[in-house]
Image 1 (tube, rainbow, N blue to C red):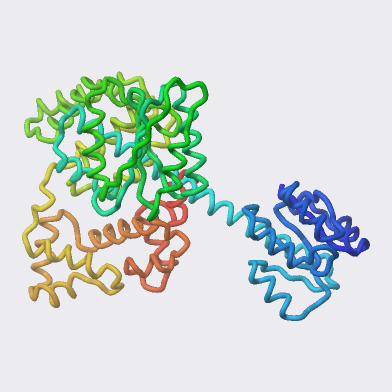
Image 2: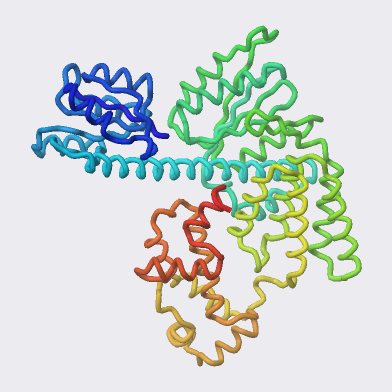
Length: 510
């Protein structure tokens, strides 16, 4: 239930509102009443009500002063202003503090109930949106964590070239255009690791709440890295240098370095930690070893490469069977997630049947799993499905068919886009000939290809935070000013509405 507090200096009004309305039927619990603004302010701080129904003119603090003070906190309290003064200046001042409900005395029970229903609805909508953003942030962090763990594994144990790593993973993170900071805390004993990580976490939540901090621990050294977000890091440096674990034998030593890109940071990082026998890539406060499985990583890498390159069905089947058996024998959930993301990315990079967005969706689903057997079955099913697809070069089409595809991408927002228009205005060729060649080379009709590209683009826009702008997304993918039509075709191709798709992708409805 939501908690309600009533503030009014007129006793009869307080008691009437308190007793006449069945608050429980509205999903509301009345936690108290106040007779002046100071008492109301203190009760809000103590009881953190979700809704406050307040008069404007009260002793101590006026209702508007109360709203102003509480709006400066992080309580998120919703206000309903109740006043006998109908002057516009009060309503205008209330709206400045995002108060959308303003009742004039005398008001009846029905008016109060309707306002309460509106506030309750608004509260749950806002909370759902905030929860969605938090889930999306958490899932994005998990995806990025897996990508970074894969790269570190490859660079250290498989000696992959940097170019191959960036080609495989550039669809998931920005490795070249964003600056990063890397901090070293030397002489940190393992018994003090959790305490220090907690202190760093609290500091970053307060001073840089939107920044994700990644951490690696090797023998007596904690390495932190995060996206650059300030001009000066003097406060951060001072905080880091002030860290002093209780009962530590040695004083910590702190160094920070700035990198123009994540790729440059990773090259430096892997060069410094590759000599250690035990490396922990911290997932929050949970240390996850990424080096205990060197032989297994190499084996999976070899089998995956063999499957991708194999043209002989017998050898391919043997490699597939061995890979599936290897997956079945893995007993560590975190390691399996790392391995799964590595294989999925490797199998789908450059694959015409799977876009980066589709791989991202699948990896997010994998990272949600908490049961290792479920994860194994999902991964095996995906690998078998991928292997059923023909192995074709994505650039197998003739130049003018590639030009058709490029034209689709450039004009996707055009609701009247047709193959005839492209043939006549871009190719200057007969549309029947273009259509026949398109079907022959792509194994699908143009209409199906166009719909698929539109749905992929819609998915991308929705997952980038545009779920609240369905009409805008519809326009961007060529459905014009018709969100209902867009929702219909989206559901036809995906089996769910755009809003349901976003909820599922971010840990909501399944």
